[in-house]
Length: 407
Image (cartoon, rainbow, N blue to C red; front, side, top):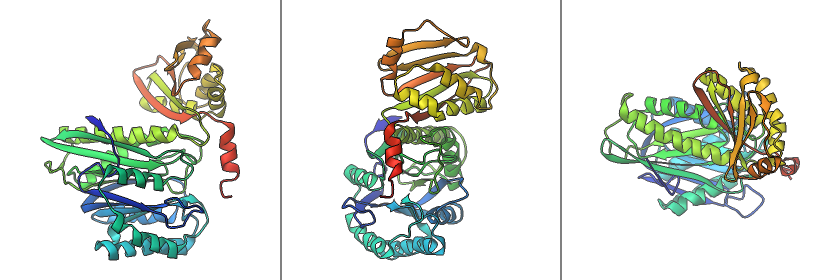
């Protein structure tokens, strides 16, 4: 696998564009469009929140019922959540406008929204913005980055990843973009993620690969414990790489899935590392657990502990908070045998051995915790299972951002 620069336009046959439709109260781009030259097999995962947005309802139908998808339009600023029949009608209007402009079926159009919950989309502005997008479509790397910027809300930077792999003697490319900085505690994916690939793969296997890789990527991050109403992670495959169709599980499928997992994982880490107000990415590794499920529970409990997150922000080696978070996680382990280490580009320090503090240097620990990312590893000495979760530190700015988000 080769890591390359780029995002959604890196694979063959994908174009993107962005425009300022005036949805936000500024003059920045707030609408993006990703289009494939050819119809795509599509897979997707969505929020498990019982309060889900109109675009989630629309996209579920496209992913689970339509034979193909060919484009995705995304707006930022308004979530189109808790908007009733009017919100549903807005999704249909967007799709039908693109049907007319791109000469593709409305049921092949994916839609996504992110922003304030409860506000109705300004449909006239939306339609006008959609009409501007086709003429701006390009397959350049810059076009992909412009689209990634347009879907941002409280994000501080665009998030893109791309890789290539060889499948059946053909170069296959997978690229993606996502947005997310707050309301990040997914049970499927997080906020909005669009992954494109020129791989030729059957729809059912694409969905399988997406669901399986989400479990160890987007499902293992958290910023604030809030699962969004709009979480959507889409993958579209147009087959233009020319590889023999991946029609069953085997070596080609595993190669594709590993590359997709890398893309989803790196995008997930970019979200965790850009959590609202944060200063660093916080990674928790749990090793030698009795089961993979226990390892995942323990790792995620560490990165979701507000006290631990605050300690990371304060560069305070308060390891008791890590062990405490593990203790209330519900996972089975023996705290009397646990070792805990923390490391960063500034060094590594063993804080705990067999459940008891070591004679570590507070000065060194503070230096280590001043790095980015900060990595904590808990060895529970029960088996050979392991898991990794990603979060961020908790700062004063998180409260400031969310105290006046609408205003």
